[in-house]
Image (cartoon, rainbow, N blue to C red; front, side, top):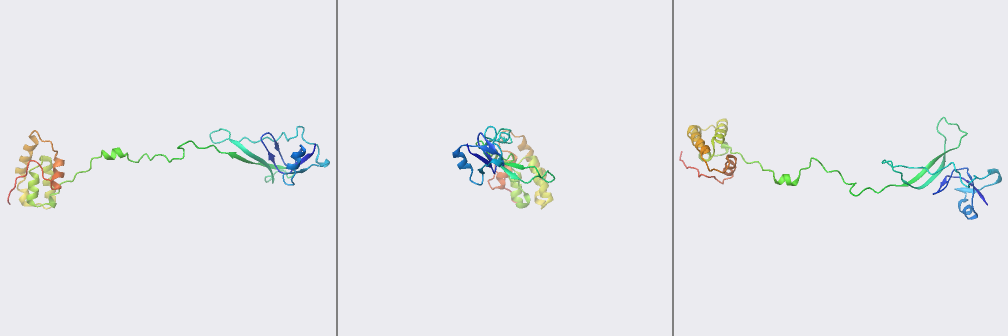
Length: 218
C-alpha cells in the first residue's frame, strides 16, 4: 500500500495526523491527500508508517464551553509553529487550530434584563396627582374671604399665614377671629364628605365649593 508523509496537521472523526507523520493509506486516499500541500508520497528515507496507519499519539482536542459541557469539534488541524522563546530549537513544535460549533442560546436569552427602576404602568394609573394649593397672594380680598368661608381651621390658618408673609392685607387680617370660629364649626359639623384639600383644589380651579360662600362688600 502507498504511504504519505504529512506536511500539515490533518484530523478527522477517527484520526489525527501531525506534520512529519508517515501514514499507510489506500491508493484513493494517497491520490487525495498527496497534493503537495497537505501531504506527499513517502519515500524509503521517510521511515516506516505508524503501526495502525495513523499517528496514535495525536488525538482530537476536547473543547468545553463556559458551562463545562464539551463543544462539537467540526475540524481540527495541527500546524507547525516556531518554538517558544528559550525553548530547544531542535524540537519540532506544533499547535492546534480548532473549529467548533457553538450552542444556540436559549429562547429569550438575548433579551436585556428588565429595568428594576422602571415604573409599573398600573402603579402610574393609581398615582393620585398633587392638588393645587390656594395662594391668597394670587387672589383679591373678596376671593380670599370667600374661600376661607369654605374650609376648616387648619386650612384657614395656613391661608392666614401665607397672607401675612405676602400681601398682609388689613381687610383680611381683621377677619381672622371670625373666620377661624366659623372654620371650627365646620370642622365639628357632621355629614361633610369633601376634604379640605379637595375644596382648596376645587376653588383654585374656579369650581367653587359647598356650602356656597357668603358674599360681602368691603
